[in-house]
Image 1: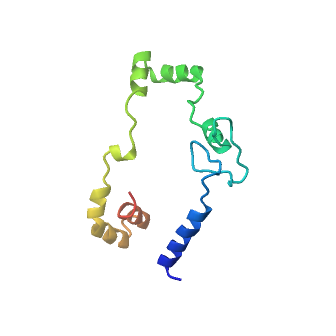
Image 2 (image 1 turned 60 degrees about the vertical axis):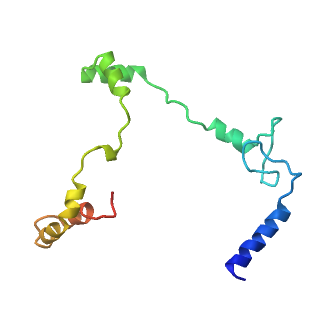
Length: 131
């Protein structure tokens, strides 16, 4: 059986298995054939309810620790608030010499062969696979 025939057979089988009278979750694709599934009065399954209960919640803050950090850094409340409200940065936002090292790869290869730089430096910083 070719892959095209297999796909057509699967679609035919799926359309027969897809029963319109099955109970389905109103928020996701799960139906009553899913193992250990239950539905509430609104038709929402227990998996969606579990997902909602695991939703992100802000962490608990130890305000004494925050005050100690502000005191040690010598920050006022306004300065601390300014630092905390700055946009989040990733490693891509900072200048790096990676591209320069990639262009100088032949030089670093020679230096590593002459044991003037560690081989690990050559492998780590001149590889084009690593970001």
